[in-house]
Image 1 (cartoon, rainbow, N blue to C red):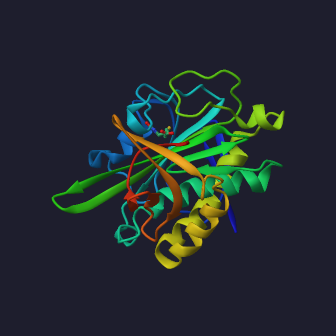
Image 2: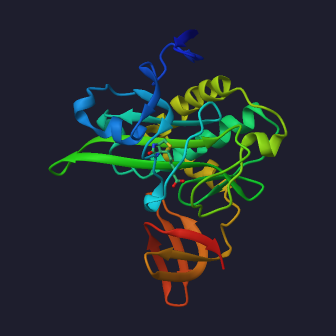
Amino acid sequence: METDFNIESFDIKLDTESIARNFIYSEEVISTNSQLLDKASGNIHGTTLLAERQVKGHGRKERQWYSSKGLNLTFSILLTNKKYFGKQINLINFASALAVAVSIESLYQLKTELKWPNDVLINGKKVSGVLIESASKGEKLERVVIGIGLNVNQTNFQGSFNVPPTSLKNESGQSIEREMLLAEFLNVFEEIIEHVVTNPKWILKEWKERCRMLGEKISITEEDKIKYGIFDDIDDDGFLILKTDQGTEKIYYGDLSLA
Ligand code: BTN
């Protein structure tokens, strides 16, 4: 069953029980992630905030993330339901990137690739990035925000990049309807995010099938340290297993390149 959403100039069709039942369209915010992280914003679980422009849109490692009105999708989804915050919490990142990949594959004739930890690539170039941020009260996690930047119809790119950027339009040679893509993403996301709780192994299996760097010689840069080794696996908790001459090491964070 589907419901029509008529939000300002953004029309999307979502399943009635969609996680994103509270959808907010905004011309400009500081950052969709920062806004949903702020408890004072009073938003409920599943709120999805999309902005045409972010004053301080940011990616990992404090890289700036630019939005171009009407040309891309920059949005965040708020999770407050504690069922997602268990041992498998790191899989939210994998589930979100996977949902971007699956929604692109289901709508367009494009093959996607997933790059640890949070990138979606097409033909070796980055079409989307995911940034998970959280807020806690004491030791207890209260809110997790999934921020997604998706390059849709841009042909020019601003900012600093860990991987050369591209857009769906550049890769498919056609203009993409943003509303259809967002609706597809939200419907796919709603299904996949449940697997964080019910079937985390499935998320990792699907993610790994799209990761071409598995088994390759890689380098991982974190701050000013570089580690080299073989990308052996992603473990059940979502950590990268690096095989080095000294043994294996779990990696939590960093920028990955082929060595
Ligand atoms: C990355 O590739 O480093 C992640 C980029 C994430 C950008 C999105 S755009 C919507 C949301 N709001 C932000 O400030 N950042 C994320």
